[in-house]
Length: 406
Image 1 (cartoon, rainbow, N blue to C red):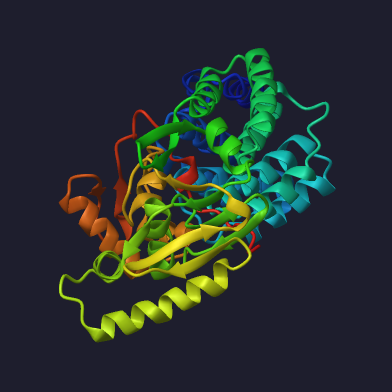
Image 2: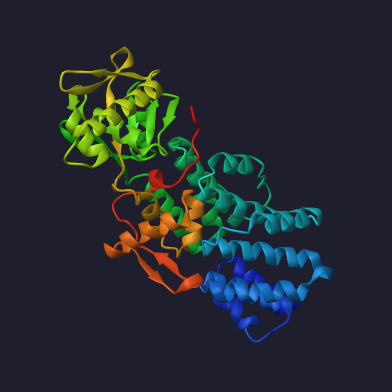
């Protein structure tokens, strides 16, 4: 590495992309192309950054495997920033193996962190936790340590381990302060603000109560039967019954929980769940079937008793029933939560993150666009979707997550 490329690398490590470009902006050799690509990525010019990094990787070729692996890791990080979530793991894993074999611990750790952040975006929290447990940031740069602890913070927040999130965030802030990189400090400050903003609403007969993440965690740690409208399921302590893929059952459970300790009329349940104003015997028969299914699923937690008017929810051992509602209602909540990070998402990436089909995502985006809540840029394969940041509350509980079945 010549002196100008080395100086550019030092500038990039300090978060000074313009200083790096001053040294290598007119050069076309592979090392300079790589420095230019990373600088453009730090400046937010992601499309240009990806092209420069691809050219650098081709220029290094197979005979310079270490430099090529570093370019692949940088490309993966740019792809993550562009929310291009497909086709990354195999190339990234190969690059990580090369870096480990050549004793480049810093860049190998960077590769693993990119993989962890991708898993977090996809809601695969258990896999992300396993990958984080294998990280050893001892002896590495403060910037990498801060990035690793920031990933641990996000995982803890998504898992509602608020105390662990605060501890990891404090470690990330300490390391970022030593690194002195403004963008990293800003990202840590944003993660910290999520702890204080409203994350959900507790509904009761007397109205609603906004809850921060710590309040949600405290509620889930009580003995109450919680009908969770954020993750769509029933929870009582460690017992969890997912209903995200059974919307009719969840709608029934929420209607009964909102009326607790009273009951709900049969026609009111039919109107709410089946969305019809003129119920007939077929609707009543279907209601009986769905109530039977909900009874079987919720049996360890509660009974569903028939009354003269309709049905009532009776939790086991006289426990309280609580409805936890998301800060924003609607079927598009997960999409808005993903888009609120300010990044431009493709339809395919949104489908991959939410686990829905692309056609389902396209219909939801069309509805949101008609309401003025999202906008698109580009056309065809280059089309991307954006939404303004959602102020006043955090969308952490609306993000996709693979939760245990029980």
